[in-house]
Length: 391
Image (cartoon, rainbow, N blue to C red; front, top):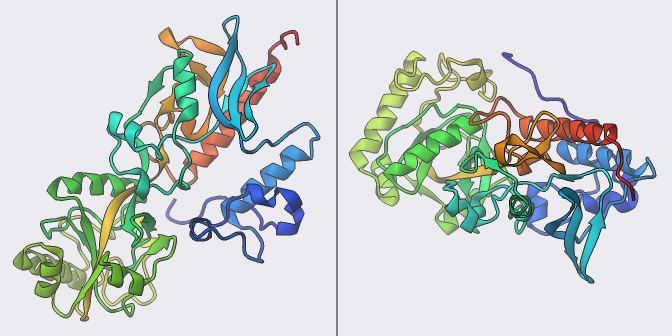
């Protein structure tokens, strides 16, 4: 569609959740700072999680157990019948009569496994909460004979490197341009974030970093959305951003050829004047225009804003991700598949624990959580339709 948004749940008052509120993580910036929820309604994904918790617990049959780190699967007579988990009180077994559904994220938080499966980027630059999504349940399922696919894939996005070494999910450019380590543009900067992440991964062949170059039209603020938000002063103090009065000076701070960077910006400004990006066609797709400032565009193409107001800035870009998307192979019922595509009886998987059916593309925002919910529902329906084994 040329315009529109994903489905968004209604806001949820924290008081409705009561003692369940700690089970919902705060927004990324507050979560990383160790802060709780503000005195305001939960919105967007947090409202969705809260409402799902309420729906589950109000049945009277759902039991939420925290502090259980799954260390293995329990199998009996060729069937998965539960999990082993490490708790503060020791190892416990949680039995399941009809099936075990694994929905514990991917392995983006484990640098060793990322390296083994050649997943670009790094755990520090992933948007996953620190210390989570390290692939324990994947390992447990593989140990039981499960097969995997797409283990080198992730839900990619550009990241602005943060002063603490992490990254902020970056999207929705309203200006600026991106260059690789040689000072040249390498893609349409307004691409959807997964495709821009893939372009960024390819650009890293020229050097470890790319840069978002912008001018002072916005008062020195990044012309993009970042999650969590970024503070220009902190970036400049840490060196993750640099500032200069001229483009040659900026190039020197970045270690890129001054003539190349200057020529890149000059050529881009020419495109801004004509409205046509002859190199990467920025602004020709409706998606490109979604975040552009169409009301205050200085030229014929709102996606092409000239860089001509000193001082100039450059923000360091890294390859970030929203999670790995490779994992356990599943069928249409979310059953985990073993050798020769045989389902492992009693074992199901969804979300980033499973290999996404979307393969190596990202059809649109909401696909990871949307498909997680759909296949979780299909898994439970399949379990319910099977004869329950004897207790």
